[in-house]
Length: 331
Image 1 (cartoon, rainbow, N blue to C red):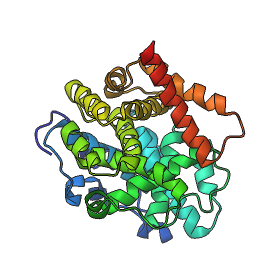
Image 2: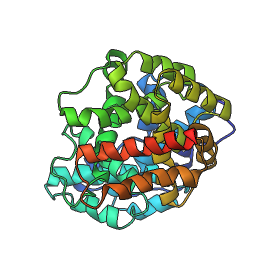
Image 3: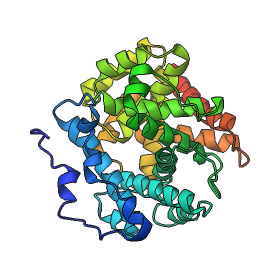
């Protein structure tokens, strides 16, 4: 891992917390903890803190996934608070996989969302999308009792996982999976944007160059995903975050970067823990304090009303959040 000054969660889980051996069908679904090593996927990882941060996030995801398989979901609470949302992301992916394989109409995912993961719903819906991608199924098929608007985050999670497993094609060749409808593609690109942040190891110059290779019609959503990942997961220092804003502005998508940041800080605040890297990122990427940036998403959601549920409503939620940023910086 190099001398980063931090201890990887991958190393921590070897001693505490630990999981029991999964039984029955579940033992065939357990993930190898080494899957969290993104270097094995030929990602362009820099030595330093960003590499440890991304490995820790994926290690927590794998631990949460395996906690469901061993029927020990309560052990996700033993993960450090800053990493816990990633644990519930993995748990939701595992619940989704089991629900789909056993045709239980989302029962396990629903129980997770109304129980242990009730304060981590954003992460759980993203995780559900990762579960669909693991089984190569279009996200939202068979979903029951899902939040009418947050359920679209599953498409974001699908985009991340699908691109993680097929980085050569999704990043190198910039393709789009045939499984998706046109309505899914924009949200898929937000998940792909989050993956690009990992793939290029939080390097503003590399990320901007990578996004520049995509058609203009896709770049806004990619920048939104970058804003989310840079705020939610971290990996960049203050100077790098400032450079990121310069790149997004030069590409014409500064508001999209801020909107992704606002969604990320709203999710972090609801989870009850605001990591230092998030508190540092929000004033730079959104130009506002965390509570104000999060309020943009809350106000936009309230304005949509209780009946909002379509892909168009989800996109309006995002665009209204961007308008709040624009209004804030014109005043």
